[in-house]
Image (tube, rainbow, N blue to C red; front, top):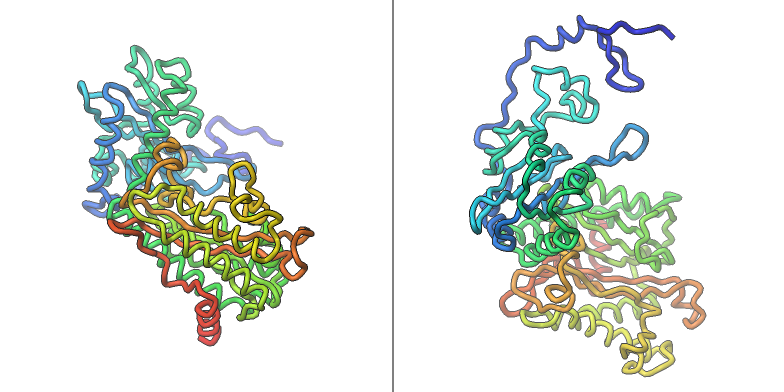
Length: 486
């Protein structure tokens, strides 16, 4: 191994050295590359109200909301970056250029705050970072906005990321941190005037403020649903090819992923493409199995928009194009449970009501089939729950910028709360009849059925956002036949 001169510096463990002559040559003769004049983040007009509502919760306290950090996938390659949902909701910044950035709401009076974004300046051509820095340099990962451009994009004052450490030294106001998002920021505040209890309150508040969606957010969710509907249609058309492939589940996953990446940011969560008994694994994401025409395919997938709002839809499809009698029986019981659950959705209903209604239908159906060993009323009792052997999980959740949106909200505002106009949620009862369950007749074993739709609570009930995808047995069969012939 030969030694290097001081003028030669490696930019990575396997990079070529950069001689001084190349360094000088790289620094000269670059044209300006401004962003489009007046560019703004989508939904920019909504940001002041969101910040004001958060500010009102914590008068006189500093609030620190990091975007998050890059995470290593393998050696020197990172996972694709997605900013923390609270940061994205408050700033409108949703792109891959946001790692390490931090939003600070600084107390500016007895009750108000000034929102300041601490960001990394762009790696412009006046330093060598633009071609030397593999993680952040523009030659490696693309251009990011500078401070002035980000102020125009968001309407928020911006400061250099390095100023954050200075801000957090010396006398401090009471401070709350969205903890566990950025280890560096956690460390800066470790000895400061904030408490884990206060951090948890901030975490809960950021979730609760997102519970009710405004019309712009509902529009983004409609867009996500529309793209997801198209993705399901793509999958139906691709089933003949998927059936021929030894890992047909992966084929299905890839077809949907193509739609998700071409129309939005990607999928809002890992796609579940579960054929046969795999559908009995609630979060099956290995997707490495074949497709059998005699079986069902449970597809649970959602496109995430560029603004990070995601759909969450499940359809269970007969891979032959037609349900067998046993498959039809199971499917129609799940559909009846979903219809009953949707029927109780309205402002003022308790959030848990729709799940209880779906489970009542499921328990009655299982008892009618002779599967439940006790009457439905007994199986549904809090001290029993025997029906859950066949349908373990809840029947829905809030939906928005996270697939399981607002999960950090306090129970009294969400799980034990009441529905309000503007809530968006899924309704997704299912039956998961395990292949080794000897309480079941053989013809039902190894069958999983879930039907999941996205709904928005309206003034007098609920509106189905995902109604373009059929749910009835006849509707599903006709839809598949039409797409396979197209």
